[in-house]
Image (cartoon, rainbow, N blue to C red; front, side):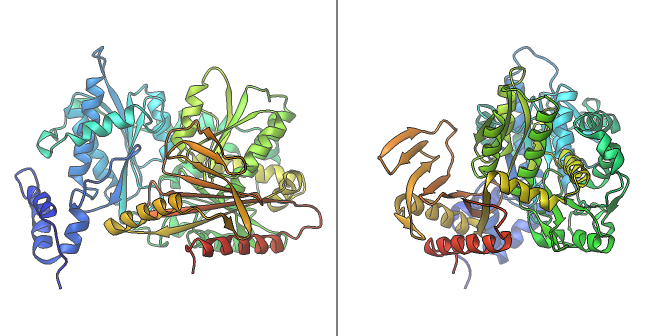
Length: 580
């Protein structure tokens, strides 16, 4: 039985049989119209959503896919907006970078073509680069905006298009909504594909070297690195853009025993050795762990295709390699930075850190004890960057991060940066060795000082048009059918970031949440459990974040405690019908 298809979808597909589309595109649409209505529906049931950060979708033909036409229309909308607000008729400049994904270079070149055809000066990297280099280049070259072609850690079928503003950060209001409105009015006939060669310049290693010098200046213990330069580090680029620059950065820091996973060192958009190039997933880290076991390495690090996220592996007390989650890595980084700033008499009340609302509250505890502010923002590094921009010249950003393996130290980049993170994590490993403790023992010491913070993420994938509808239904249900008790503990507070209202159920008082509106719900339980529910902004998933704080001392067995707390999360998840 053939899938039913609406006339609207058929009409949208037929439009793509017009004169502005190439023969391959037309042939694919004819095939779908005749033989594959299910694929046609997924390709044309909507326009690929240009969200507040840009595009992300499956590569293919159609309005809901990443292809030369959706990239071209988005770029034309960006160009129109830049020209519209250019009231002084200045020379407009945009930097462009791309990662190792399939069609990344092609989409970057299309972006350059359209921007230059609209009279905008373009600086495009000569080969793949991490996101941090794009953010840095925007500020270094004094550009008005930037574009990077990447789908970050998504599976190989995806690609994406991220837009950055003149501050080197991803778009926020009002520019995000204004650009979206421009794009909505673009037809394919409006797109100028006739590039102006005179307005396109190639970026070479000058930017890399300037950036790496700034990275090197972040080191807080260069003398310790000199002494322990030979600690064994294993690094995997997971076939991505970190492959050349991260080993170079570690070498510049002074580390002399960096071992690259050879099978994953070559950029490859098919990511042949992993199911998904996401260091959050244990399977993606396995080849690096295997090499670490062979070499008896002190530290394992791996980065995703655009090198903004980093996964970390360390040895536990039984000499087995374990993978840190994003909250644990963020905690180790912030602990080290605060400790060293204090020791070197650098810490003042004007210093601050930033975390997202789904990142461990341990960071806030550290900041409180250090006498500085921890700002809390919505999920998305653009909000961390916005805090940095807000306080530039007034306060001093130490570092920040989010649980999804993204961290930033220093303020010369305005997005999560795995290059900086890898260097600082390696420095922490060298410093721990100088203290005669392992990275694992360092983590245990942090828990002893601040209490044990346990976090777990459960993600439910819902693909396609039907999946989007199911996620919307689930979010509505969690707003309207709130349980009173979970695992025997009362819900005593509700934060609904969509309405910007925090309701204290103990006294029925309401407070305004001073953050932008977002489709996020948080439940606060009497036993200090926090549950956050939100649709992913980058993947077809609904995510459930669990956070629990409990006591931790010398008598505590961490493995037993994790089992107990994991059982608590499992019970709650079953009560919410998100686990069988």
